[in-house]
Image (cartoon, rainbow, N blue to C red):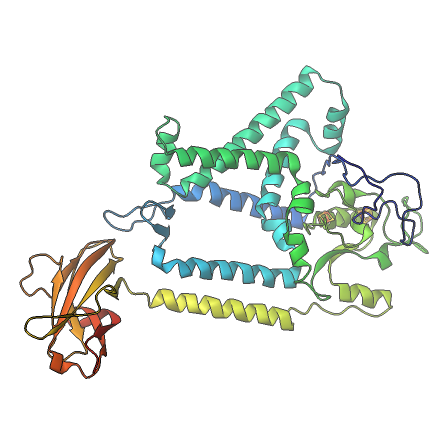
Length: 494
Ligand code: SF4
Ligand code: SF4
């Protein structure tokens, strides 16, 4: 890696206190070697919340493909399935067809706006609690702790020369990491195929090649990102820390070290006075539990994923030394500035212009989607006019137009429906490909399928008031209109 005498702006290294160009002669490398982080296990309410979310979300991810959902005969019974071969996405009672991809778009908009809202309110809670990188890294650290012990034992083991003890512990850790990675990649492909049959054929070599390819890619990326790269993904690879800076303001909650209470920091012995000093006893417990290896006492930092484990650590320390909890706590920049100015803090205000805006967009998008789903038709119709030949004049003098009709039956049962053409007095029509029905105005829509027909509409030339007449093609069942498609009937110029 090339070196350069440039300032590492992120760390401010090479710069004198107070900023400015570097004063020392030491060349500063742009590449910083990764320092191994050994996060210590901590207990407390935030750690408990993270355990619940960790095992809850992983349990859902690994087991959901095996959950069944009865959709009737002939339909897949997997609760959540993205069936590419059939062009369907199933999520419990919901079935999305390719032509309804706007529902997926709506879901993505909801997810994005929801994330904006949560970030504007509580900062990087996504990073700290829900992001797959955080969740899987946490899981990999659990495995690491199981085989190598907590922080001090892991540091000792890493420094120790290679021995049988070190070899088997490291080997077992990596083996379990690989197993977890494979389970992660394997679970991913189960969402794209019938999970039970894929789970059976995967190990006999009969599964589709794409399943092996994606399981392999996800296995390797999980192992690399959660096992070896960890905090580097958040700090260097992920764009979200940069984006979220635009979504927060001075009233957003963030994990904050209350410097005005903690400083001046100094070690404290039992019985020593607390007068003339801060509450921070410089025990560095907040640093040792941090999965990002940073010191929250240095103020807001790009690396901080807001996991709040330093709050748990510091509250434990405060309890032991008999000081109030909350030296590190969720707080706002506004309150920090107020306290520095000797003024009282303000209560957290969730209602602000940006949060109201995000909530409004979220509610509007959600309402449109709910309305669309609630009023969604189970049968759809489209009528596409032939473009090559605008119209044909028959020997009788009548005018004929041809159309391609598509009938989408989203139900899992066959449906016998009537077809009619409206808007053209005296017109007759012929439906080609609709079977032997004598009236030729009925069609049988196959279950869970798209059927294509030719429709020939013939009208007396005298019935045409202009060269273009709007007509409606309608599907109905026992008098109830199921679907209508609007199109045009063309004739000679008038
Ligand atoms: S855990 Fe609390 S008391 Fe200990 S160093 Fe961190 S801020 Fe100071
Ligand atoms: S500083 Fe605290 S909140 Fe930030 S990543 Fe470290 S432990 Fe988590």
